[in-house]
Image 1 (tube, rainbow, N blue to C red):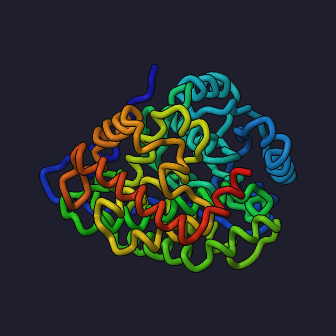
Image 2 (tube, rainbow, N blue to C red):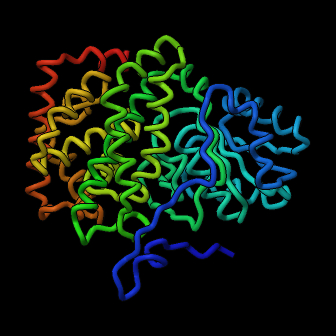
Length: 394
């Protein structure tokens, strides 16, 4: 029997009174060099005896092996599950069926955003806790109580919400230091949107967070600190990853990309940046060739252009310096491709979060914002150059 869909908005936002403030966060967030080797000790707080480990084939051979070693040294049994690449309902249901008879009492999801989101969905269907072990700092999925599901072909499909956040998030920054620079930079693109979307929601009394609640001061403060951290330490963190060196800048940016952004977006709210990012996935060339955070960066540019925000150029300059796309020419879309733009605009317009903006969002105003962001990006690229963008795609 299919599990009944959980609705956070119904729980918190459907009563005939002012919506409450709601803050969602993982039970424990653990970050530092080498912490993956201690996961067997950390997981002791939930008293488990047998766990599933979900990861790609590569992940199981690398980080998964370290997780297994730590579990076994703490007398915890494990069973491996191979994630096949797409966070889609068929992939999720395949693992639910396979794990139903394994008698596991926890699932550890190891990897980037899609295996992490799949792990949350699988564990919810199995009614067991989920522990997240990110191997990338490329998005803010690890700390949230939701998953973005995609079609088997890779286009965004639905968002699932869960009644609880992950039990543990174990972020080993040595793993992040050895990962590709592009993933960390994409995480900065995702994280930068957190403050600008939360700010819109805080200032709009009718806006609601993904939980159906009002944003908390704490989550908005996290969003603002997140942006400040990226502006101050983002470039140094990217350089550290190029050299495979951990350090203060990388630790701060990993926390911003993962913890501050993860709590900030879920409990602070979304506006136009994320609907634009999801809309971009409707174009094959975009969901195939660009990371989620790169699409969010372009969405943030559009949102700030629509707001006519004084921060638009500052954000664009930062994106250019770290290598994020800032104009359509860097994004496989021509301003003259009206068919693609129509698809993107229609998808973004259908997303309720787009309409949390302080002004009315129409097809014409959204097209104008896309073009204004494009022109700003061209101007900034001319002044700043695009060396970082080209290097990440070499």
